[in-house]
Length: 226
Ligand code: 5GP
Ligand code: 5GP
Image (cartoon, rainbow, N blue to C red; front, side, top):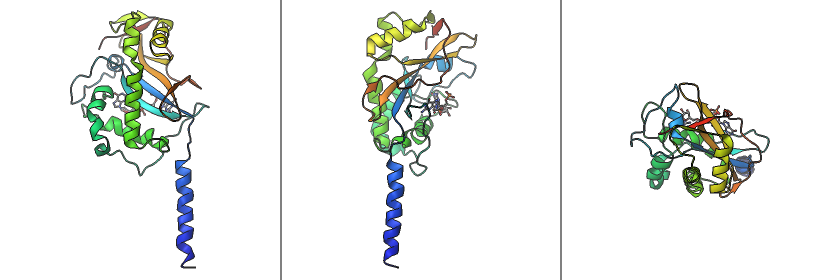
């Protein structure tokens, strides 16, 4: 019996590990945010300790999602965010995944939240370093701001239609995002977040299997400066 016990424990552990590693999602949303629209609301914002971020789309997160619209979250309480595992990525994270939440901080809280809530649910493809590296590479590959500005859609406080915004991004990147709007202090609908879909392996863009339930846009969409 004493000799059999460790084997039984081993088998039980293997079963648990197998279940944890099983992929419980179908694709990812890569969610980008326009800093001007995060800040230009009643909640306002705080620049991170590293200073005012560039006037460009930053990453909000890379979120595993299921085809039915549901999603797993907080999949491994034992995989707490460890900044030392991404030390080589910190300057890129500061530049391309800046936090705008108050109070002013260094970003570790935002990155830790995204890793723990979403990243841990893709443990079959990404460890912590791989998760952040993949999101950074995917964002760079898109070049969303260049796609918009080369079609004359500029962050200048002007108004654009949803078709203009989606068309410019489709033309410039090859993929059409879901566009989520929020409202500025005066109540105007403004371009807030873009959702792109990424295949389950986390390395290529795909057409979205299902659209998120973000706040829809008005017929005139402001693209505020930052
Ligand atoms: P999610 O909405 O991804 O679950 O959570 C975002 C969390 O990260 C919130 O607690 C929010 O306060 C925090 N956060 C920190 N910086 C940012 C930011 O720049 N944008 C957004 N959307 N959330 C941020
Ligand atoms: P909100 O209610 O602000 O749209 O979303 C709050 C948080 O819930 C997001 O930051 C994100 O962490 C999570 N969330 C909201 N919608 C989705 C979704 O469609 N898919 C995934 N994976 N997470 C989502």
